[in-house]
Amino acid sequence: MNGEDASVREVLLQLREQAEAQAEALDGDLRNLFEASRSSNADDEHDPEGSTIAFERAQLTAVLDAARRQLAELDVALQRLDDGTYGVCEGCARPIPVERLAVRPSARTCVTCANRR
Image (cartoon, rainbow, N blue to C red; front, top):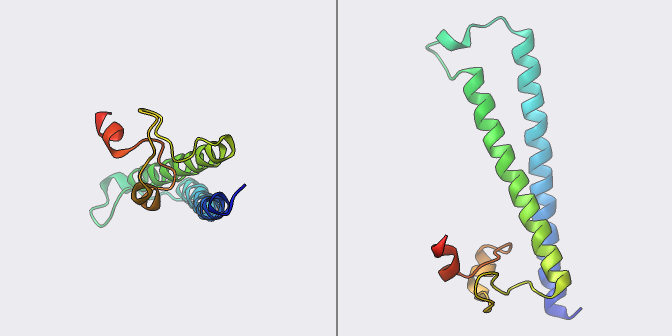
């Protein structure tokens, strides 16, 4: 592994650690919300003062799903680094610009191929 791959790996591992911590925290928040809603007799569907428990649950679930997807994308990026295909577009097999990888380290496609989706 060359020095550039090692620094890319370090960045990907740091991002993965952050995504994993976020997913764990969100999962805990969601469990706490479920527990709180079980022990509450509040009629949240008709409460004009705030969002419903169902809305909060849906919002937390969506953010948790996004964190899990990010975690999976980072795992794929690490595998691609191991395979020697990191930074190569899956669509056209051209190099993914360094600027795109700096903004989105788990990118699997160049901007042109991403726009085709």
